Image 1 (cartoon, rainbow, N blue to C red):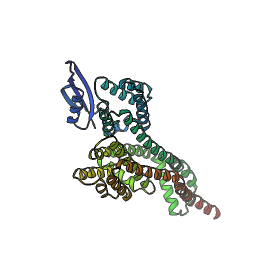
Image 2 (cartoon, helix red, strand yellow):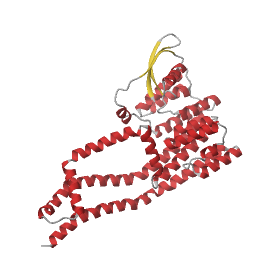
Image 3 (spheres, rainbow, N blue to C red):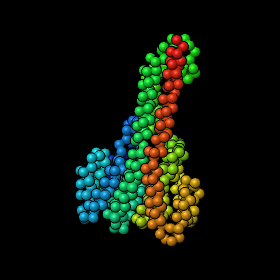
Image 4 (spheres, rainbow, N blue to C red):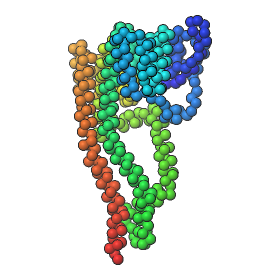
Length: 402
């Protein structure tokens, strides 16, 4: 997405100037025209800082913020509260200042006569095509509050899964992080003082001890360079993940990870099924729904699968047959979808598939701590073993020789 600056005149002939976020100049022009403005000039706004820094420090709207937004908006609409007033109330209640400005902007658009879907479409970084299409279907069918409940439920399930996975990762991440910090301190400050006597003794040291002393010297003399390289790597890694090649590599690597790879695959299957079912319930055509779901899944590999499936369905093929060409879609999923297509209950089947894989995720995440504990203990044992073998044993041998 890029930021476009526009100059235009409204229906009263007054001069208007602003910015919109879009994928192209044509898309930006459509957004501006949809606001009933006569475009005078539109151009790509230059970035004020290098792209990797801009992306690294980009402001975010969390999943929890979106869940609260959709849930509270649905309640207010069910209470027949005017949409603009509901948005103003939500703007005042949210603690996220960045999200507050977005809600205020959407409220201004709706107050000016725009539909809610068109108002939210201006902020694609927060409200993706999935949200916009669902909300648009609710506006068309007159079921906007019901659609908001669907969105809140869908995001709530996403939030629950994310929270469980992050919660399971806190313990191993803390242990490994602490191990890295302690290792750095030991190599930089402790090892040099402990091995000084071994070096001065003039005895032939084991290879492992010499390697540890050499590594310790590097950390002691070039600690500033190591820290600089680590920080540079973090910035480069963040920038590289924004590129097409980097994102594809990382997304595919996640799916091939031992233990976690299966969890990620199940998460993406749940997202696809839930989003697809929600769109179909909202009255969005199947071919369009598949195209929208790819913007929700947040994985390049599955996005490519859905793009291929969308083309195949557009050519008249069945959804199950279109998805069955990829080994990243389990056979049971395609078979269940085929049953749903034959019975005319596709959205119900998709929800059942999502429930099944949600339980699979819950079971795996619940067992993650017990699965990772022996691995962490092995790593700690190896670290201690290397330290003992490289330092303590040569010192014991040296003392026993006297």
